[in-house]
Image 1 (cartoon, rainbow, N blue to C red):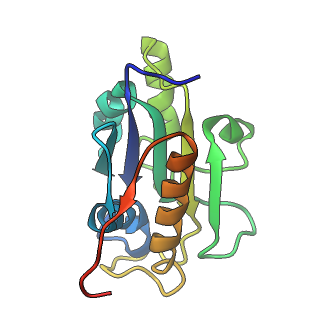
Image 2: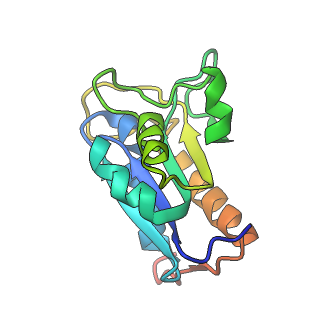
Length: 170
């Protein structure tokens, strides 16, 4: 069912100082540089905002979260997409840092307040390195463009018109 009262939101989560943990932020930057989005889609660099993401989550539907994810026996650089419902069995860890408030906890807070988004989808990569560093690893960095394409395709299937920007230096 289409939600006509809220805009779609793409939320990139991460920490630019922890190599692959910065993946979500780099995806937001890539999307902004390479695509033109309609006013009905908001892109947000959520950084490590935690509880401060609540207004964004409450004001947008559907929500697409871009982040790193820890999955048992998964190869670094692997891409995964899943819904919020898929996380309920506990096999997907959506919080990489033990002291951050995770997106699932934020969604629970929104639900408690009665303002939760109906559709939440995650677009994630398995990190290779979470060490201090400004560069993503060799297996994660190339996945920025790939996950961006997947997001654009998904939004297209939902009826959003997104165009690729012309690049003079292709």
